[in-house]
Length: 302
Image 1 (spheres, rainbow, N blue to C red):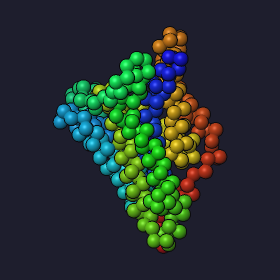
Image 2 (cartoon, rainbow, N blue to C red):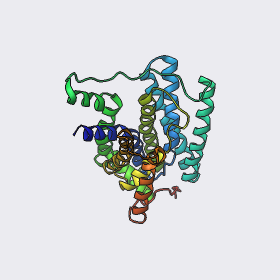
Image 3 (cartoon, rainbow, N blue to C red):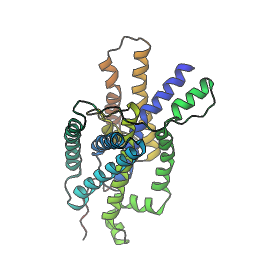
C-alpha cells in the first residue's frame, strides 16, 4: 500500500507541468490557434522565474515573472499567428528554437555555467497531522503550485464550458465567420485564448524551477510537446486532457519506481517511457479525434 501511495504521489508531482501546459493548450486551440510554442513558453518562464527569484531573493516575485514571461511569449505567438498570419506551426517552432538558444545564452551571462545557482523556493504548506498519512499530505499538497494546479483544473473547465467568454472562445475556434457576424472579435478572442495559454503554461515553467531549486538548460525536455499530445488525447477538453497528463506522468513515475526497486532497467529506457507512450497514444487517436473545425486556419475578415 505504501508503494502504491508513493507511486500515486509521484505521478501527480510529475504530471504538474504537463497538466498546466495542457490546460493552456486547450484554451489556445479551442480558440483556433495551434500552440506548439508550449515548449518554448515552459522554458522561457522557467528561466524568468529563476532569474527574478535569484535577483530579488523572493520566490513570489519569480513566480509572477514566470507567469508574465509566459503571457508575453503567448502574446508574441498570437501576434505572429493571428495578426501577421504566419503559419501557426512555424511560429510555434520558431519560438521554441529561439527560447532554447536565448535561455542558454542568458544562463551563461547570468551564472557563467550550465546551471543556475540555487534559488529561493516557495514556502511549503504543512497540515501538521503527523504520521504516514500526514507526511503523504505534506509531500503531495505541501507545494503551493500543486494546490494551485488542482484549483485551476475545474476553473479552466468552468471558464471554457460554463461562461459566456468560453462560449465565444469555442465559437471562434469552430466557426470564426459566424462569430464575427454575431459581433464577436475573432482576433481579440484568439489573442485572449493564446495569452491565457501562456499564463497557465508559465506557472508550469515556474514549477520546473521550484521543483529542483535551480534552472537547467533544456529543462523543459519535451514536456510542452507531451502536453500537446495530452490535449489531442483529451479531445481538447480540460478534464480529459488532465487525465491524459496523469497517464503520461504515471509512466514517468513508474520508471522511477522501477529504478528505486532495483529492477535492472536501463535508465535510458526509463526516461523514454513518457515519450513512447505519447507516440502510441497519439498514433492510436489519429483520424478519430475531432479538433476544433477552424484550428490552425487564419481568419480573413470579409
